[in-house]
Image (cartoon, rainbow, N blue to C red; front, side, top):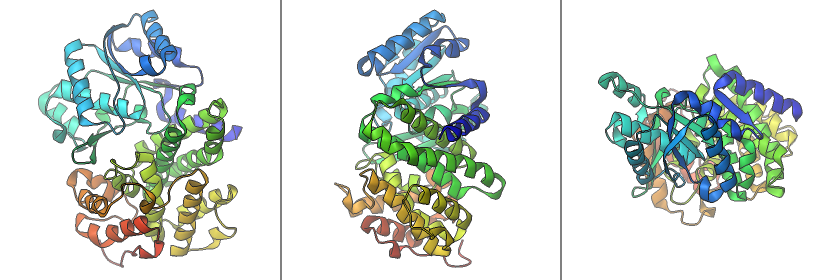
Length: 427
């Protein structure tokens, strides 16, 4: 496992270089990391209530570096509700800071990114959902955005590393994405020891979020990046398989927390190399009944079966990995076609069951047919079209009902046989 961790570090260093400080016990370096961006900062965090000791470390580090806290506002609730982003936008406008520092889990960092966009470029959420709309607005207006530094406190979304901001409309129970290189934090920090305070459920949700980043990007990787995507994905997934259970048994075990932090960061690298697809797309319509990581964990085995004809190389590698952790039958890697897809899907489900996760949607309290209908409708939204295009078996909006419908029915009941194969020549 030491070699695997070292390799993970090599990959992360290749990805972020000196712009990223990470590891165990590095929190007090935030001042030196952030100081080049200005002398006045808006601090977005709830650590003053949740973890006063870490909050004091951050404030003292900023003060030593000559950075004044010009204002502070609380972090965001899970799934980054629009209302929390608007509160942060107002705080940015009121405080007039030179830069923003979000010391939070993924939802808070996502919210901070979007708040800076709205504060500095104007407009509303719908102006920026989809891919490249922030950059387009900058080009059209000539405006610039102040820097937003990410200080991650939870292993999961890797929002501190990525070009994504996930925003939820609570009234519509629907999540959408801002995707743009312009919102990547220019510098970031993650002290993995901060995650020792994560609850068991939060730990699970974050671990499966990172695992899903690796898995979905791997599935959808085009030939020109498949070797890199495979290296990132299999490394991140193995760290999760090897250490998640230990982190639940002994939450304070820093060796396990470090491993899960590295795995989550590899998930962040993955989504900057490629893109997520089916599991993430469906999860966006289940925000009122499931955490993001849990929704992805349920959905990805079913998409695995649908994608199987197009990802045979991937499935053989995954079967070998799952076998090392006694999650799949001996000889499964010798299967092919749909049979191999179903074997890997069952291995992924076995890992979910091992840690107490549900494996189909009927096991989820509050699940209704209306959720399935909402997921199908959302999949046709042009602002989420990138997820359809990232699939190894790409779908158009016109084919969503015909092919995604059975995937959702299978995920609802747990019956893999309901999943329809894409007919030859369909596009």
